[in-house]
Image 1: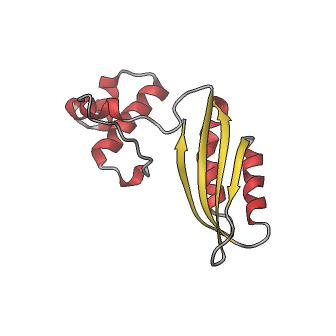
Image 2: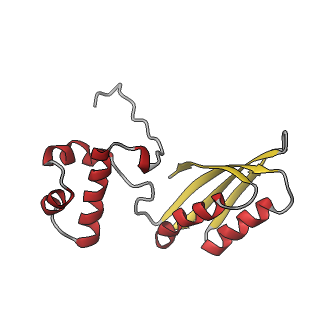
Length: 149
């Protein structure tokens, strides 16, 4: 990568990634979970070594290991009593620390809310379930993770 080339990062739903990228993720997961060699995992997944080595350094999980992680969740909510309270209950049940809550004045019955959360390494795997639970709540129109450290 040249000095002028700026790295850009995106949060992308894994389901829309090409099969080759998804297979590299599978190899990394197998190596991590089963403690087998990359070569064995590559064979098991059924991709070429060149495909794996072409992409492996560019794929990192969103919730990479770290002592503490801060991330923000942006939501569009129906302007009805209790919607934000139910979301905060889900967050509390997960045990995460809320750092900030920003809620804009509702326009056309929709309120935009951003919540910044702090979590630690032990809770990282609970985040996906928490986000799914929030998405399923009545009054939640849209949810996006907009950043992490």
